[in-house]
Image 1 (spheres, rainbow over the protein chains, first blue to last red):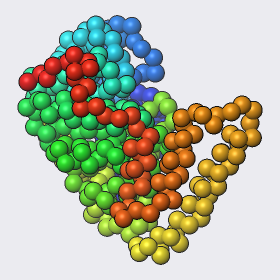
Image 2 (spheres, rainbow over the protein chains, first blue to last red):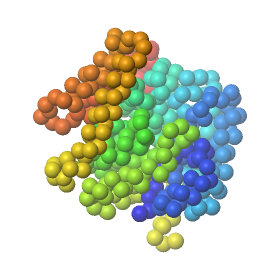
Image 3 (tube, helix red, strand yellow):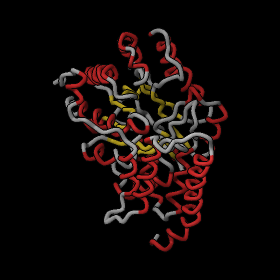
Image 4 (cartoon, rainbow over the protein chains, first blue to last red):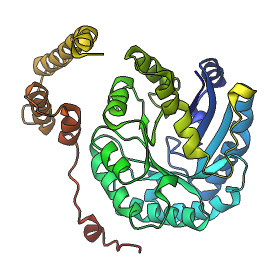
Amino acid sequence: MYYIDPHLHMVSRTTDDYETLAKMGCVAISEPAFWAGFDRGSGESFRDYFRQLTEVEPKRAAQYGIQHFTWLCINAKEAENVELSREVLKIIPEFLDCPNVLGIGEIGLNKNTKNEAIIFQEHMELAIAHQQQVLIHTPHLEDKYQGTRMILDMLGEHSIDRSRVLVDHVEEHTVGPVLEAGYWAGMTLYPVTKCTPSRAVDIIERHGAERLCVNSAGDWGPSKPTAVPDLVLEMRRRGHKESLIKKVVYDNPRDFFRQSKNFNLENPAER
Amino acid sequence: MNSNEILDREFLEIRAKILEVAAALDRIERADGDVSTDPRMKLIADAIEVIAGEHSDPIRAEKIQLLFSRAYDEQWRTEFSIASRF
């Protein structure tokens, strides 16, 4: 089955991973800007990173027939540094017209601090000023519930079209409020700290498949870039229809992304 | 799948996961030191109670997620002195 991984940090993965993804049916990836595993020292580091996301990765992906899309921001962890964040916020508009940029992301909260909240709001203002879609990171583990509620509070203050916002990394206790508020939701398949494929399918069964996406969020930490096919297998084992599986792993991310003017997905069946 | 089919499929997995939890708790207790007052041990005990308890609505996973979560304070903006933007 063809699928799209809507959240995958390929700058941290090897070319062999691109090959494996292609063999498993992945036709497109979206890569949000994120934390490199260390705090960067200047805005210029981010300019280089944004060039990597808009110039280098699309070429690497294309070698395996995968389309590469991206989102730009300073991530929630480094957003604690307000001065650096504002430097980066000034750089982002230079890249918004690059052909693979879908919007602003993954912005959000990490430890739910005041500085993170300030920079989240400034990202939202940038997104609205430039008519960009938004992809949002929610915090990890014990901070997720509090942070997700804070993010929903802040989103509710903006005039942005809710159908152009995806709140990511939802789990059992946060998926309901996100979907009920009219946003898209993403589930991340992580071996220990987020959803397993089984629990993600449970969430689909409980909440339905409308505005719900699933991703691997593969990065430099413990993660599995081919986790989406694991969910496909779990859905098949439970007897779900192929049309429902395709909706979750292909139609839904396509429908969310296609609201961006830069999303030019080639139909894999017509290649 | 009906509940019997799911139980057939999941029984050995559940058994294995329960054994992993039991063995990990044994390992902690066997080791030097004392964690009996560590709040994480209370969280684990409470979570096990949620699993074992009766539920009119099957939301054990959601309840356990909330158990392991920090509380949300609606007044967080006041604490941070951040005014609503609009």
